[in-house]
Image 1 (tube, helix red, strand yellow):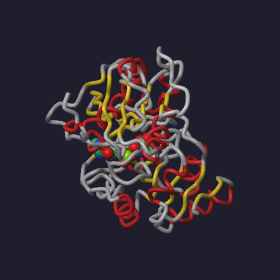
Image 2 (tube, rainbow, N blue to C red):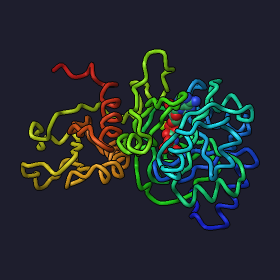
Image 3 (cartoon, rainbow, N blue to C red):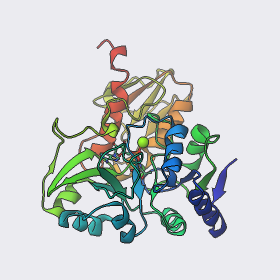
Length: 329
Ligand code: TXA
Ligand code: MG
């Protein structure tokens, strides 16, 4: 097993692996990342190979301080600095013009870099010790569920990587919000762990949806984040028949009607009280559990599109889209 507790010695060892061009999975507040030296093109290429990720899907570079930002991003605008000061470390990724120093493989040949400073002490210490920005996508196979526990990483990528640093359960539980800054405009590339309202409040700007001329970020591909079983979304749990033992039920909150006693079919509740922060933190681990259950299909209750619910509904609807032709009505 390659899961190592996050003590000083193991973080030092992980930093050495990064500096030698290896791959380390490490915790962040959103999901586990699969890290390599962002300034080393060969190391970054290993990430794509391990994840079976297409080279057209660019990586996020993780930094520990603003000096590292200046290494890979050229003259960030006032709006970028304002957002970085307000929300870093935290679940916000900014897409900004890149410098020559960042290899093209990391950005899939784009002239912009995606950057964030993660709010996890283990991630920050690892990046600081390595002394380089760390390129890291989520530590799962391309298109599969994101990992929020070290065991999720071990199950999907254990053979491909050098080390997994254990930082416990990810507190936010969904990937970062990605905002592209063009001059002074803010363009949403992916809803995520930082609610859009907060970004609009601090920046004083309305976040725009990308238009057709904006390059579509692969995180926006319709079939992302898919569990291995067909998933269908129902407006509410009222319409679900919990006695169906072949179906796993993914509920946002505790249903009004009584839950069946034994034998318990697979019923997972993201947050009994309907709290979106709690639901986000549980989201991927619940889907991993359903993946492993004997259920043949998943019926999911829709999630309200407000605050963090925008990111959760985005992932749920993308998962459902993959299977939409299976359902006749
Ligand atoms: O929370 C997170 O963001 C996690 C943790 C590990 O930090 N990382 C993550 O990375 O979700 P990943 O690879 O799963 O998603 C990165 C996405 C790409 O799919 C793409 O949509 C966008 O970031 N991206 C990266 N560079 C970009 C660029 N230059 N322009 C537009 N989009 C970019
Ligand atoms: Mg991912």
